[in-house]
Image (tube, rainbow, N blue to C red; front, side, top):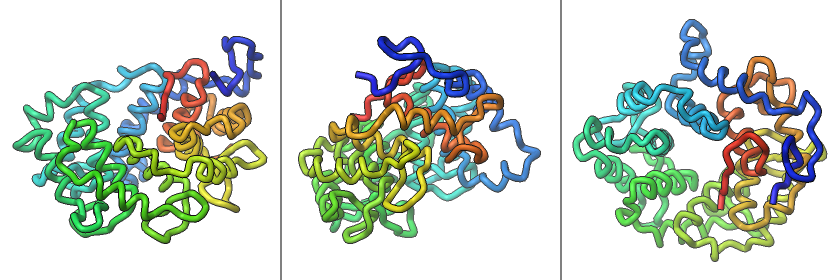
Length: 323
């Protein structure tokens, strides 16, 4: 059942014009992102290039416009970011990292590009990517490092599981130990942090819940306790924040709401208020969504704002099931 009343929704009232989803401007905004090479911001964000492509492409899929970016050029760019060790960097010539590798695999999955990975990727194709991910697992603790320099974080377990599950290579890693590490990160409030004993944070909770969902081990989660903590992230304005006493932010429309969906507690927040907060963050003329109303839009918040609306079954968007 939808949590949002919107245009065309049975029993719902039409939203005012300022709260309509500006689909075509959002599509054009995403299409324009790689044409702004004369702007300083374009070059200052090179370290986000591959992630940005994933965010934009995913947003286009949510908008039911999956072909709005050219498939061949998309695959060409992704493969140009692959390093000799099989992993992917943020842009051509950048060091490989698990965050970018997960995005690369997700992009290739969305554009049916695994065949091109086998033909034109580094020797070994999918197995080369799988080996890169596998080699980052700490075999003693089960967690993963982000890259060769060794930083460990629960996000990286999630990224590893996303990449390996899409490539159907989960058998390459010790899933049980990784699950055990996530369990060790659970806090008294039901949430999870970057490591055992670290503060609960909505982004890390998503990473842990998503990894546990892929591993089919959500039975280890105290769903009521976690659901209570997550539902308390909704502010008076309807938006969601990452932790107590912080401002709401559109990106948590996905991190928090999808975690609630995974544990079957999405109905514990007010979806109508959340959808209105998200829509108030959009630039309905030029496209894109910002972190909060009145701020500058970017592709990161555009993607996760739309993902939040899709999770709430907002009209005009591809439906999403985070569970």
